[in-house]
Length: 328
Image 1 (tube, rainbow, N blue to C red):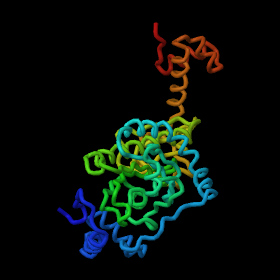
Image 2 (image 1 turned 90 degrees about the vertical axis):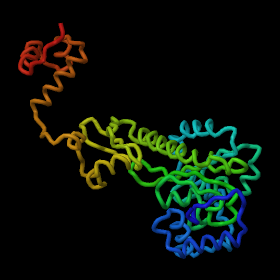
Image 3 (image 1 turned 60 degrees about the vertical axis):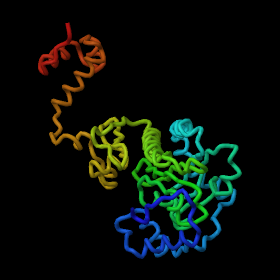
Image 4 (image 1 turned 30 degrees about the vertical axis):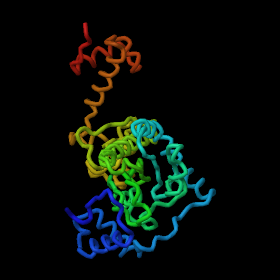
């Protein structure tokens, strides 16, 4: 098995751990391995040394308040999804963490009995888990890779993080930009079972649900369209459409699937044009309006005419012209 992915139930001595990382980086495996690519960034890009961990960067109370305020809207949208994740993870040695786009923890849900231990491990709001600061870790590395991943024990860059396994997934905002990361950190005996690997898909699913809920929240006045068959690793493909059928918002999944750009959205694009190349037709538009009025009035011609502010006789002529017959 690849040296970068070998797992063991025994903790590696710090010197052996550092040697393993340096050997993997020197082997040139970064192009084939997401993990080795992260180790390579840590050494060559950030100038970190696995044998010389720097003290963790912890925000002041005022700085933390500002970071939390910046994430208020998405944290509000995430409440239901986080509650479901908490319910699933109960009974395990796991804590739920939410970080902003820079890697700063802004929310944590930890078992009270283990709060002191987890605080010592830096698993509390205000700690910076950016990859440039803490090396390879669940939150920081998934923010760089922009994909769900598992960093298991000795796969962490620094030896001080080798007692935990981290399943993390990025969260993208309503304009397709990375907004933060969701992480479930598993500690204690559960790190050596199958739970960490199972948790990755659960965390990724929860992150996608948060994106959906946040998108609905940001475009609450719009009609939300799910682009059938287009959801992918980029997330749910959703469009927000206004009353004139103009697209006013698109998730990262929709932007990827439909090749939408910020410029297109700024300039305006009709939802129908994304799926149908048929040019607009005034007659078809009028037919649709009349049919909707007939449906809303339960087939009552007089009521439908009143809805459109036209006479009953005019309504009957249009029904005949467009071959729209009311139900008997």
